[in-house]
Length: 301
Image (cartoon, rainbow, N blue to C red; front, side):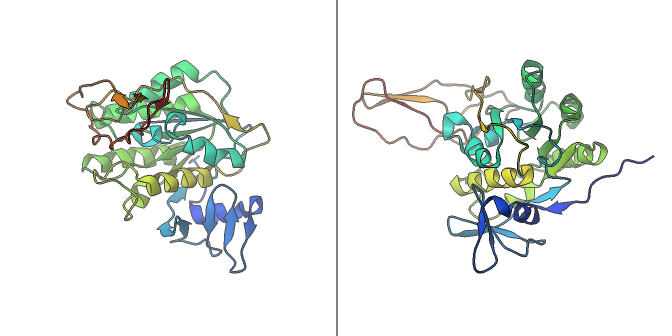
């Protein structure tokens, strides 16, 4: 008997369904706590207002993750796109998900291919996760067949936990094949939903000049869109779980952890493998007055 897939939903509509967590305005728009303002219509082409910018909301294929989860422990796995939202760079992902009741760990490193997801799950799969988000595919695997194999293993390892996969930005021709694999996995696995970041990310102001990594506005759209696709978590204590994987020195030009001690900046120098997507140079770091032991981090790009 053929697998019956849930009907695709539009993220704006999904977010509107959660409006009871926030409030509403006189104009009929819904405000979801920790997410943002969603037009009351909530139909195709819905939008989200962030920092004065009116952005189209990514489409969601499949069910809200929270509606299928049996608990609130969430593992988020990714490359530099997700690493930029991790605790070491501002904690935007977990901060966006706590109001919805999720207890979250973000395991993401710059320069990682899909095989990284298998490594993370070998280490942490038995820690009682109830749901997952996976954004891998920005950095090339050995081949599209290897990418498919790695992603199939990830999806199989996570089953039957509800799992959200994200499409990638089409910054090169090979990304279309990556996104095809992501959608195929959703079509053949009932526990998988897909958030179409690839389409949403092309909007003006969402990506940096490299056409890959999110701007401040882009990260806000990303984490709020993920939050909307997850929806309300089942009952449990929300919070942030410490990550195991935090090494962002894999690629040349990647922004790494830097220390500012007495006004000087130091950081490791790394060399990129030939097949790995190199991120743009780090943004300048503002010098601060001399303070012993003061440290800061800059976001991976």
